[in-house]
Image (cartoon, helix red, strand yellow):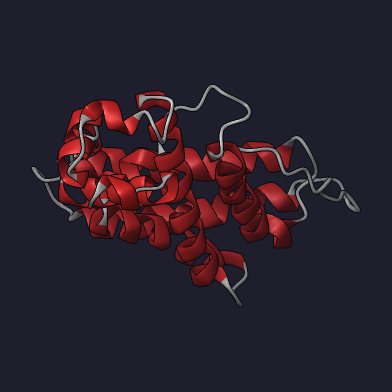
Length: 204
């Protein structure tokens, strides 16, 4: 890509494509510069540095994965919604491991574009749990339970931790989601009658 045609948005697209070819650790300014056919110094005409680039890439990957999760849960409720929600993350992680890793990068700047993109994921989790009428703080606890279970399993699966003994990871995945759905259902039933969610949209 010639320097004259490069913009911040196109630079991010090239960075995301770079993740498709390799893992998240491969995203460096020098690797991206080589891909774009410019000098490393030329990258600074479009982003402030590696941290800024990573936050923009994280935002792009978070938005992409949120679109897929949202489409997966549309029209579903209860346990089917929870299964579709989790399966969408697993499918994304398995098909695009570098991009999935980028969605897990820590973000410390509250003004980062990754913050609103990440908030969409919490909102999707809350949509999955809406049928259970969990009040706060139980709703936030449940959102964090979903995230911890799903992303913890995916991290272990990606590292090969489930490859050395039966049953197959897919069987455990299905059983864990069934147990998670039952746990959330019981959690909702244990709440006082008439309790309602606050609709809080904080990130998980």
